[in-house]
Amino acid sequence: MANTIDTIRLSEKQKQQLIRLKTKTGIENWNVLCRWALCMSLAEVTVPPIEDIPADSNVEMSWKVFTGEYADAYLAVLRQAYEKQKAHLDDVLFNDFIKLHLNRGVTFITRSQHFNL
Image (cartoon, rainbow, N blue to C red; front, side):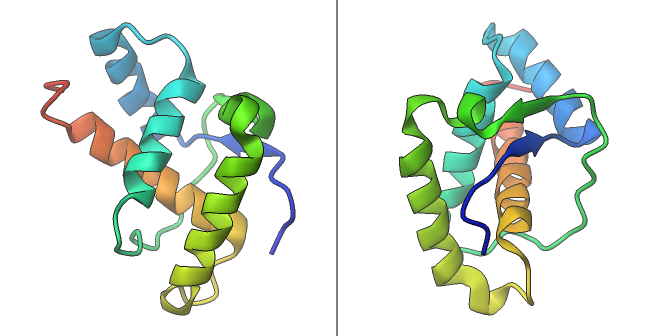
């Protein structure tokens, strides 16, 4: 398992979903929306669907920007979730685990009734 995460890069699909969300909410920062999405997915007890998620958009942020001052807390929560779920993940690596949760969370947040997207 990697000790650090350097960069978070979104897929084009995630980018388009978050653009719509940014328009609806007025929240301008990718990192804020992505943090919410990640937390929404981690709050679920189920393992996110395993899929190949391309990093094919131009939206990229450093781990420090993604997590802000709470980098250590996010990393600890992610490591704990990974340890709990890795038996059901068919050799998914830690960095891919994060991508799976972020992807599921972006889907959750864009489908949320609170935003009427």
